Image 1 (cartoon, rainbow, N blue to C red):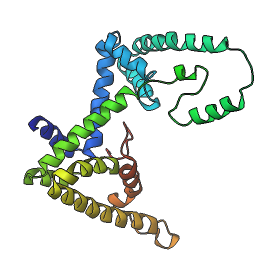
Image 2 (image 1 turned 90 degrees about the vertical axis):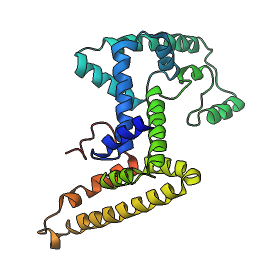
Image 3 (image 1 turned 180 degrees about the horizontal axis):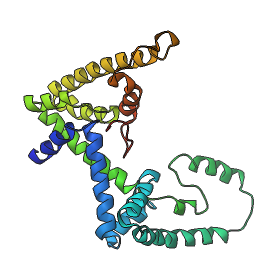
Image 4 (image 1 turned 180 degrees about the vertical axis):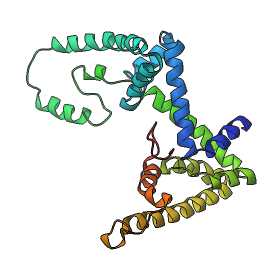
Length: 250
């Protein structure tokens, strides 16, 4: 608890949603450790293979990290060699299937099984990962843990004061914290909801001023820094923040 709150306090001194920041840091540490020492670790390789690699965002983050940090791609090459050796036999087996039209039942089955997240017929299941992106799951687990620590910490006046001075939570992480506070910490639930409503009222005012000052009749009125970034802050609130978006740190 004390370790988690210490990290939360530090994150709340930085721009943007503190849970987004802590989640991104955990994801980045995982990727760095993967490249540094776990590329050939059997358990790590099985997690990698279970998802057929990472999601698009984290796959490219890993590529950029290795290119920037090591000026090379050996770690990525080793990991993707493993995936290719798993996928090629699936495709070769599919290539041996007789090319015949699907029956009406098979056509119906294909439509059902091709729903999002579901494997298709005739071996296509082998082209789907058995698990979600490991980095996404790790990031979400990290965010849930910090949401718990935040909810428990809000009984402390210092944590409330630190949170009030921060940029607050984005909507995805606000939902996460409110869900944890709902049954176990009614005071924290009400406090978080009220704080979010207050922040969003101010954001709405800045956003309306941003819009108004784009009108030709009011174009001469200067914008405050808060107004100028209001539309970016709105995106960050509803969608959460991503690595190096550069919109809130400058």
